[in-house]
Length: 335
Length: 285
Image 1 (spheres, chains in turn orange, yellow):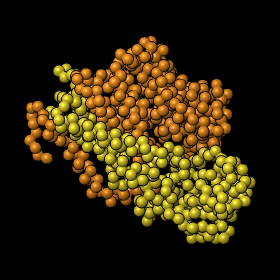
Image 2 (cartoon, chains in turn cyan, green):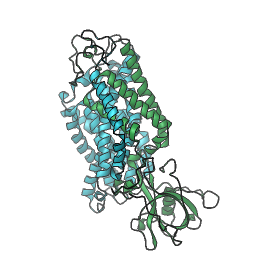
Image 3 (cartoon, chains in turn red, brown):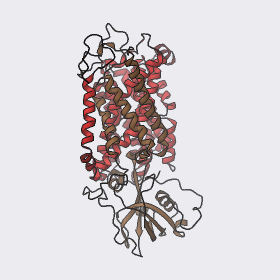
Image 4 (cartoon, helix red, strand yellow):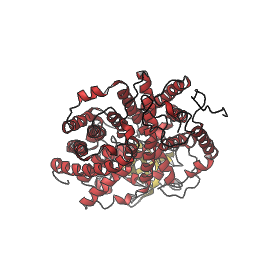
């Protein structure tokens, strides 16, 4: 542990000892405090929150890893030139094309954030990458089938959700291409991967490692927020909403943000709230995959806080509007 | 956070993911089909960390050669070099402070292993009723009092309040919770079960009221701190059942219950009852 720190070119013996010592210290301290920590779980609410927190992490980490694997593959093997050839040059066209690409990637939002970030790094227009970011978790076959299964009596919910989410992705993309500024996205995002003779597979592994560590921390942060919300938001929020359409829409939109359910599951939760009309539940389904606490944390990690602070409110407003319009068109009213 | 620390952390995260699949505790958090993705993710994380470690040990370039040994472990966004002098700065060697959050799930899964959700979760937003499942058309399994899931009992009753469940006995497993608006004459406890769609975060409860003419439930209360109350007492075994009282109830649905009028909570007339161990998996799907 006390190897002399090399001052010049560092040989591969011992580097960055500080954080490693902190890590070991934290692990040791937690081990020593195991008894009191387990004791905390005696309180029902803490126990529920702890389980929900771990559940969100365990559920989301595989999807995050999948996203980083894709991200790493793009960094290593898909050159910016290829992407430029595939995507239309005009943002007005590139946005819907990128959104449509989301149709075929069955992933939850955790997978799409690292991929969208890598697309930006490879020179894809930001607006198009963001449209992909919003479309991939919301409109893919898995989510649409889940919605159909959850609403057996209302197959029109599938179409309404598809339209609402597609409009959200494309709408936000177009708005971003019109009003978005490059400096809102952290400069580090746009650095291309190294081209210094490092083998491609090493670039791949390095990108995956870097993305997992970077995004994983934020994912855990979001999972923590969602777990706290799950036990803190009182059930009474949902009582007595049935007769108040506007209030129901507002509460369901906010709930979608706070609960941060994965997009494969939210349709079942929405279906279970059968006291509410369909329209507020559609808002819940369109807002949830586009903006929630877990996703905002991931976006802040991937693109920077300045980005997340603007992107999240914009997405929220566009998603609620799109859901309402889609609902009126497809469902023909609040229902 | 230095590269070495990141590697150690990734091995730990990947390690706990592999561990919970191998020892089965992943079923407290996610559905059975998640076993493969969670296991693969764990292996990938460990592999990526090992590749990084090996390349570091052999002194191979990592695309950010400037940051080693110069920062003394301080976290000042060491990966924001401007790219002069070095080739390829796409991958910062250091990670920001948020990466430390990854320690939390590792600690939770190594030291605490939070139990599966139980009666304490039947209080919050999770008190919403589970959605009705598509009702199977096929008849009940053969045999006397065949075992049936609680969700299926509720779904079948909703589809046909005077159906086969009102004429045949079934055996249903669940845990006891304080009754919510029980109809007159039924016990002060309900039989409940949690249903998850994706992970425990979307758990929702299904329940049946228990009519107990034989007094079989006398002296059987819900778990010590059931119903979401914080007054825990003597339930801290942390072994996965959260101190809930699991029972197998044999009974028959009261005709006409389980409709929208009673919030899709059928009443089950108890003919016999036994305490059972926590089922595995603990949730219904």
